[in-house]
Length: 113
Image 1 (tube, rainbow, N blue to C red):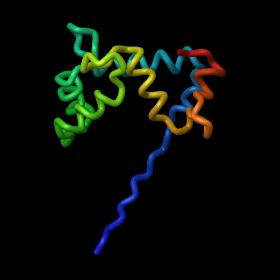
Image 2: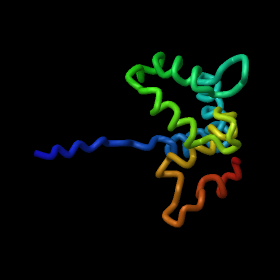
Image 3: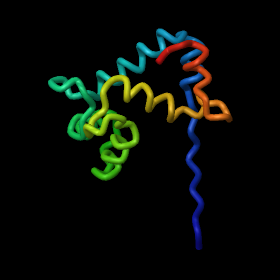
Image 4: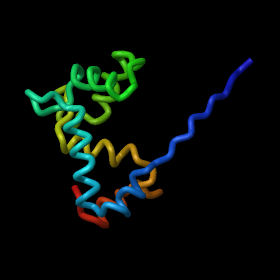
């Protein structure tokens, strides 16, 4: 017997962008980055993401899932996310901010990154 479990995902980023404006929205993304980053390195590292995922109630995340999350956004190959990589990743993961042709509608419209 196959069980099909669907997870509903509500993308709040477009409404946040509308409400806060581009500058305010980017500011909120930067606040999120600071919450997750390693204070000494100024980057989101494996250790900082693992430590802070517990604070966010995601304590059941496996190490391989954390590594996968970092790899998804790591553009320079250093194994960690800087603030720009984090913001780009957040935009890429938001279906509401990406139009059908794959261009970044909000990025282009608001010139945020």
